[in-house]
Length: 405
Ligand code: EZ4
Ligand code: CO
Image (cartoon, rainbow, N blue to C red; front, side, top):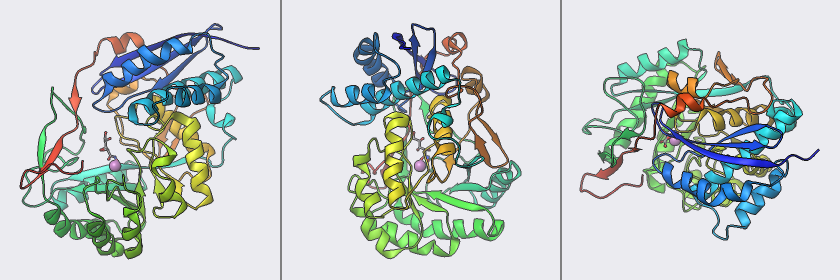
């Protein structure tokens, strides 16, 4: 029996950080949720959805997920980019949510069923000094995590992105009308990073998987040197070494190191990474459900990757809402070459605004058995926390030049 979309509403809320949520309602009264959060550009994607997409959805058959995806992608004329793809992603996830609810099945069952019992996850540990970092990693191990991303301060720099001097937890975006400005010195970082990560490896032994994120700031040659220097540390991966608008840049890195490479949290379509995958220049692709056209497009990216023994490992910071995070865990449950899901965690209030069936236990995630994606949206609670501008910092080198992110 055919159902019809009767409403598509967009909600901006800030329960500690900003989220853009799409709610699609059908004539039969089925409700689907999607996440369209683009950190620091929330209003742009909300407008894209409200002004340009929502009016096109009303009257459509919610079961025509692929056709709606193609309609929004090809029909817009202006393709790709984070805003467009996040908007399409929100529609896609909301429609999968509706389809799975109508089927009375958790989403992963519609994606081919479970290929594993649970989905491996990693979280973050960060501290300015090495001794505090070891404590932070230990605290994560005590929470059951089997894989931890370690970030640390750099001697001589006043601040480093993602590393707080006083608290272990951090929120990447800070409230305010403009981004904070930080300083960055790649040479100082490269001098310090191998020793800092070696200290963590010495401390934890070889059972724990260790990861590290370079946040797009190295040249290919610097990245090659770092990867080589880190080989004895036996990282699970080294992330975002270069900005990678130029995919070929990774070839030089690859030629010089066996340290596994992960990239792609800022990518939006398969065209951002097809060379990286088909030439096996990276080991993990980090594209998120929210930022790359939803479950439908991510499945295609992972299918391409599967043919080249590259694995999926989606971005999962606090700026990916629990809605698309949940969708990602369903993908993890049903995708053979899905390696690991990043899980930065959420403030208590975020869990309340987005009550969810997915759960964390003992180093793994499970999507839960609720029909659909299994993530709700408490509209009334959300309305108490209106949008409040917040931005990621920018960084300048010591001479004042803006860095690559
Ligand atoms: O910088 O989520 O791997 N995780 C990360 C994050 C990102 C932010 C960007 O919005 O790199 O901390
Ligand atoms: Co990252």
